[in-house]
Amino acid sequence: MQKLVVSVALFFQILIVKAAITELNDENFQTEIEKYEVVLVIFHAPWCGQCKKLMSIISQIDDNLQKNIPPVDIVTVDCEYEAKVICKKYMINRFPMLRSFRNGKEYGKFEGSRDVKNIVNFVRWETAPPARKLENFENLEEILQTENRVCLVASFQKQNELESTFLELAEKLRQKMCFLYINADVNSLRLYQNPILRNKFEKTFVEYDNLNNISSLEHFISSNYHGLVGVRTLTNTDDFKLPLVTAYFKIDYDINPKSTNYWRNRILKVASKYKDNFNFAISSKEDFFSELQNFNVPPQSTPVILVKLESNEKFILKEYFSVEKFDSFLHDVLHKKLNPYLKSQKPPQKQDSDVVVAVGSTFYDLVIRNSNDTMVKVYVDSCVHCKQIAPIYKEIAKMFRDEKITFIKVNYMKNDVPVAYEPVAYPTIYWSTRENRMNPIRYEGNRNIEDFIKFIAKHASIELKDYDRAGNSKVIKTEL
Image 1 (cartoon, one colour):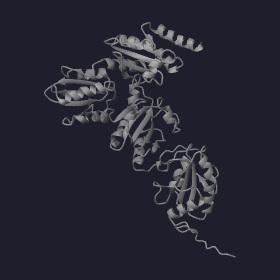
Image 2 (cartoon, helix red, strand yellow; image 1 turned 135 degrees about the horizontal axis):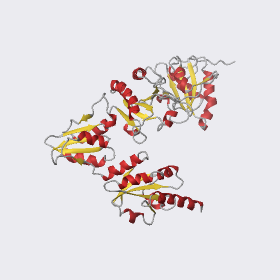
Image 3 (cartoon, rainbow, N blue to C red; image 1 turned 180 degrees about the vertical axis):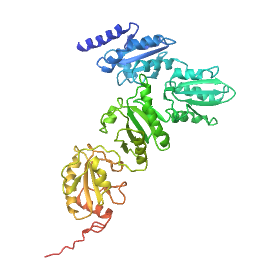
Image 4 (cartoon, rainbow, N blue to C red; image 1 turned 30 degrees about the vertical axis):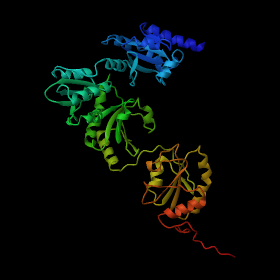
């Protein structure tokens, strides 16, 4: 009964917002949805907090969509009680989800932030022709400003391969960018940057000069779409490839674009110097709060800079941002003068005499810069095998106290390790010599003392005092 009351309450909330918004169910969804040329469908659940937030702005969305040419209606679907079959059919696995339907068939999936502007633009771009033909380019700048997004602008002779590829891409990428074209005697293609991101460090457009190989046009678009410093959001993170330099700060191109571009332009100044070495992006520190939390970054008003390399190593600018500090930081990262950032516990105040505890912040000093050979055990607290091997590992460490070997353990659940030392199972044990720290040898033998001795004897930089290279004891046993 309580569930029914909640569902009815949400249903009437929708009706109060706008009578024209229809709630569909399993029985009438297919027949009703086919009556619309284009319709926006909101899949929701009564218990969903984000759904309630969306319902609070649904009247504004509807008002804007009624002004669209052609007008577009909204329908809602309750996946919890009224339309379980339909929601399963369309694989609705989170709420709310917004889809566009055209003539009864699913057409587009909304994946942006759920505000009025983004949702209205999603529908507008779904209903507009994928490519817009112009008579000429006299008013091109005005059109680009109105579109306010990336645009591919073309001129080509009628009915050639360039035109057909252009129109195919327009259909495929209609939600991502705009496509404008004229018919002319000369073939050309230019990718124009979003007007709000224009700056003095790069051109307004990039020319596609490989017209004889039109198959690479989509790659050209993806490579140049974001410009030198792109705006990385929660929905486009896959666009930004490693090695990536990301600046996190307050980004608001709707209300305060001047302040946003103030910082972006300073990022651009340095990015233009290192564009052949790194990819660059800016991200909202509010949207990526959890990402920044992993790096223990204190609140600050200036951008936070994070570098992630293809090796998965991460570097963070610990000082307050300035152009000079940013430049110096990237120089040091590029020339391998900095230690990567590693998540870390506090180092123990007192160490065991046999097995040394390493944490993220001490790993480089205890392992990488150690003058001894090192054996490193990477473990987690919950691992049964880790607990079983602990006394054996300690016994081995005691046996080799007089050798130039340091035995180390690190808790991987609470500390990061360099990529070369990441575990493949628990525990994972590595051996690294003084000459080859970043290419350690993984121990794959049995977890008993004899096999450990043979492994260490074979791989030690200097032959052991009490064992030959095969692991045989050098001590001559004498009988009494």
